[in-house]
Image (cartoon, rainbow, N blue to C red; front, side):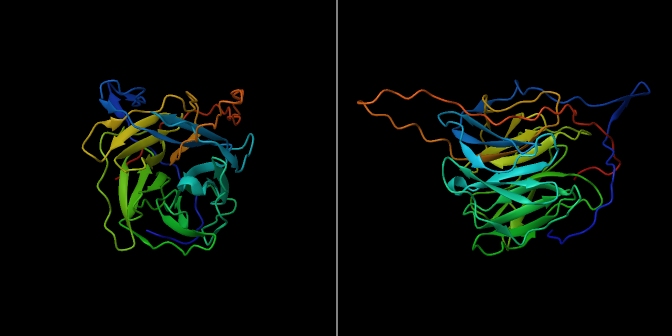
Length: 313
């Protein structure tokens, strides 16, 4: 569903829990998937923290991307998602729906976004996705609505179809567009994945193998590998959880990404090209490697576990 600007009331989503012996028992977050087979993949990408800091990751032969530009709000819980369009750059979305471009691997920053939604003073946005060619994308609101925007001289993207929507509930947590630009997925706070189509295209198949945190506000984003054979769900601590659509094992998670255990910090991830290897010559000494990192936020709010009679579908 697409939608226009609308005022939001503050709504508390009560998540499901289980009763055991008369006591309320909250389902704990899975910390590992050691019993699940994984496959090696070559991929890289970016996670954004809630202050707007960008953090690269990679696995296999890829190396973490580099980036420049982009916003930063130290001490403020503002960022709500991140998206990239290959080497064309990326954008961070803030809680009001504002889009903030950045550059990847020394390239140009994404062009100026136009025509998208904006909710000044309201914590509404929950994610952003870019079309593969970088010509536009969609902002996700907390109810699940997808709102198109154009980039630079690009045209406004087509309307979406079969979008999951929870009116009056803060349920949606992330969005991604597949590489064929025919559709994508939104993700709810429990980790449920919901396909949608773009234009007249039918929604893609639902990925398998991912986590599901019943009754917990844990999921913070979803991304697909470059070949769409699988991807990752990101959680609020920065953890990666593989998903698959190829009938194979889920992708092995990156081991060099950011992680904030016990803190509700991360949004994303999004897939990007890996950083190109440094150029060396036989006549010059190898330069000293200097690593620059973006300061991560250190908020201490743990993702809440709440209960609701209306479950994400």
